[in-house]
Amino acid sequence: MLLRPLLASLTASLALAAAPVRAAAPVTDCPNRTAPFSASSPLVDLLLSEPARALLRPVLPGLDKAPPQFLGTQPPTFAAILTLREARGFAGVSLDAVNAIDAQLRQLPVTPADQIARCARFDNEVPTVTRVAGKSNILVFEKINGFKDTPSVDAAHAMLLAMAARKGWAITFTDRGGAFNPKTLAKVDAVLWNNVSGDVLTLSQRAAFQTWLTRGGAFIGIHGAAGDPVYFWDWYPDRLIGARFAGHPRTQQFQQATVRVNAQHPLAKGLPTDWSMTEEWYSFKSNPRLAGAQPVLLLDESTYAPNDPQMPELVMGADHPVAWTNCLGRGRVFYSALGHRPENYGLAPHVTLLENAITWAATDRRACRGTAR
Image 1: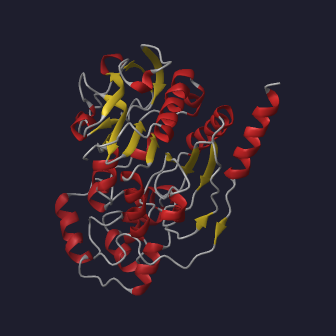
Image 2: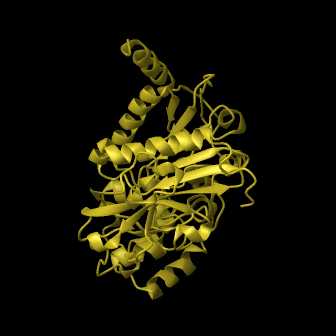
Image 3: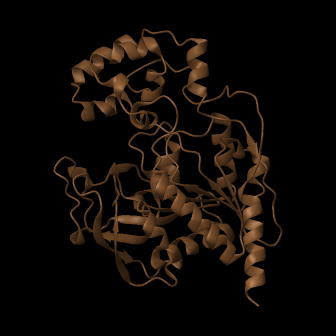
């Protein structure tokens, strides 16, 4: 008897998952479209320009032979979430050399061809989203211009599809930034960013997202959605997420550690007091509490080794949030740093956490009523 409604729910979810898109004109309002070349530009924008690339070759001798996922010009590429200033630490380039190149880069003209190339990784294509009455309508966003860990993205995707079938949600998956327009956003209750990395929204899409969220929308971010070393949209890490990524241990990337549950938080329902799991543990440059966040999970630093010799900033101490909620205006925000290892999307406490978070974000419209932020 239970099989028929489950199949019906799954069919509805599958129908919405493959949302077609409408063709659109080329993007002309991408971020940094006319910004001067500099050492603080997205590295990919320097690589797209041959004159700028020529200035980089003396200090980055392996530039033209680097794997495309690291220094390629087509997304996903790590070059979309780096600047020359940030990359110098990895490449052993001196600050004096970077400053000298910066001065030369700023002399280069930004041509119409440069502007077109910079905007090519953005889109205006609007996916077809149909609101289903009587259900929580969830839009899962999967556009990735920066770092893409395909196994974790795919595992989260499969988990969300199964969760939607189990909970009776209407769920749509899209990798089109064009979904971020007032009409489309008005059809959904919550937007979930599945390990999204890199600058992915145009200026008008950013504005539509901010307006929708602060007027009562909801955002859920998973793992890599707050894991970029550099951001080119300050509102996203500083206000929406509430903390900037500092890094994760490199020499011991995956470690077993214990997370402690804030039993007083509404999202703690059904969670154990604590649990241990193996994960890529994120640290942040500031505590999200300073931005008004309420932690759901705290990472017990005594149960793993956060003190990477090259990255002392990874030690946050006794108060190390790894999942939290917040309010932006009337908008509900949830972020969890868990989710790099694909198998963790089948771990019962992690699944319960995300199920609680999505349910809260999509339905609890009183949670952020009257907030001033």
